[in-house]
Image (cartoon, rainbow, N blue to C red):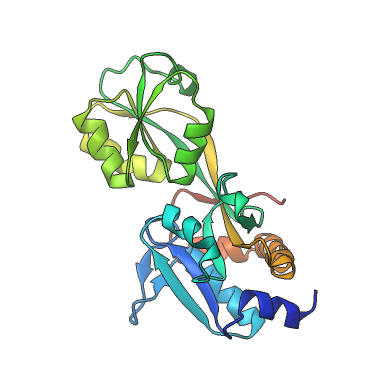
Length: 242
């Protein structure tokens, strides 16, 4: 794995094009003066570009689904996104560099007390299916009925308008949502931890190996932790060693 081979795969245009999911408010926390996204995931991309000796160009996507869909469209070289089996069919992912707890919010006076109570016949779960946690729900829920939403905000709207029994979400977002509905509760624990990783096209074998090594070093050295601290993100933790 020579540096030249890695650069040829990860920056074939001479620039590292980094696909960024703009809807993840934990990983993208703002914009710079020139409009570029700022946060943990843009910071990871910028560091990769710096080490490769090339500029970085951010390719923003409003949601994670379209970012994953564009894997073979030659619009990004690396994608910063939750690693999920459905996405891994077209994308080679690193191990996670950080994790986000996913759980349920339930309405006032709900009989649901713990995570295991939710997947039962007759329970209706409002779920943003194209999110990483939503894909997990679609694979693993066996008895409850899913009410699909098209975005995080739409999942809240549907949860309220259709009087669902539970709402899936990233815990940091649910901590905000619960304040909007007096008496609502967030269930303790988690049904999954969203694994935020870095992906590249399947053909980029040298590039994928480089990204894997970079992520492990970035976790071990404290670089990921420093980005979380720099951007003052609450609810994001450094993933364990692969």
